Amino acid sequence: MGTSFAERHGLWDDEQRAAADDMRARLDSGEVDTVRFSFPDQHGLLRGKTLVASEAAAVLAEGVNMTSTLLAKDTSHRTVFPLFSSQGGIDFPGMRGGADFTMLADARSFRVLPWSPRTGWVLCDIYQQDGAPSPLATRRILQGAVAQLDALGLEFIAGLEVEFHVFKLEDSQARLADSGQPGTPPDVSLLSHGHQYLTELRYDAVDGLMDALRHNLQALGLPLRSLEVEFGPSQFELTFGPTPGVTPADQMIMLRNCIKQVCRRLGYHASFMCRPRIPNAASSGWHLHQSLRSKADGGNAFMPQEAGADLSPLGRHYLAGLLAHAGGAAALASPTINGYRRYRPFSLAPDRAAWGRDNRAAMLRVLGGAGQAGTRIENRIGEPAANPYLYLASQLLSGLDGIERRLEPGPSADNPYETPAPPLPRSLGAALQALRDDACLRAGIGSRFVDYFCHIKEAEIARFNLDVSEWEQREYFDLF
Image (cartoon, rainbow, N blue to C red; front, side, top):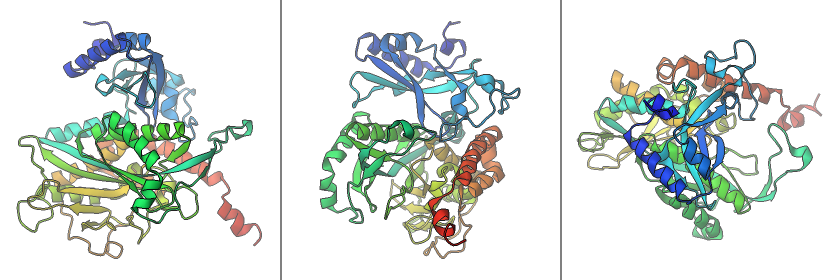
């Protein structure tokens, strides 16, 4: 029996152990000076600690302790559970009193950050002190959903299509009075006026920035396919090739951090907020392209055999599952108050749970057909601020339920904004209630996690409702 945390609790398989040995050798060689140990929190933000290389090598198998208060925070970084009360606010012992949990490196993710010379980075999974996986580990939730699919002899394949904004940073608003939870957002100016969608002149005007992003994303090993000027002011889009299992979510975590950190170093501000408060803004979405692959022969399990068919029978069942659980999954695909500004008709964003054949107005856009290995479903419901592990898990669990119950999606919606179909939630509060009421997602994600997630999000809604908006001031201050 070994003495390290990983060995005592049997947390590494042979592949992870070999990767840890390789990582340790690279650290011992002097390749890097520091290593960032990071884990994805409940919001899909990376948190962690930076260790000097010698210390990083020493604790690689032992793990790094972190305070459990990190798991109790909303998007303002406020702790929204009474962790120091007798019950702790969350119903398992590892959270009470701000006790430690352990993040253990998955050394297969180790890389040297191209924008921060001699800095290593490694993604971690989180565990309780007794070696049990944390019930609040979002990466573990997706791993569990992938394992369910694996038992059916299938593999999840996803490709990312991500919109975001980049502005010139004019004032970082770092004066003493600007601190707070949250602090004052930065002052910015546009890189483009927008609305010249996909014009080469607009792209050439930001070529230096795009080239810096391309260089760093490719240096991380991400399967970047295209860099595009989007419709709105200072809005851009990147697309990435398909990858299996948990990898697409890991890549989303990496690309968001890469873009934000590289842009900041170059004097820009990147934001994955769905709809920034700027004039003439266009909402940003995260369109998730997904399919299933047979582990037996490597074939696309969504590709139909019959000419004229949109999807295989299994693909249709999966599609129907996504429709059946669209309301409950919305809170995981679009987990911010701001994200619900996007669901509106005639905006290339969905407003109801409908599917269409190659139709960008539908929530689910089906692409491909007989003989087309790229046959897939594009879900257009997500926002780029979503926790990628929860977004992907919601898709898998919904699709698996459709397969298990052999659900049928009905006919394609030729006019998605007019087709009778269940409306998507119009607010985060409505989406949270739909998630609470969805027995399938509660079972797959875990009731404890669903209640925990909803509590955090409802704390954000409560703060939002206490704030007097500019709209209210303009509407009522002079009238009454």
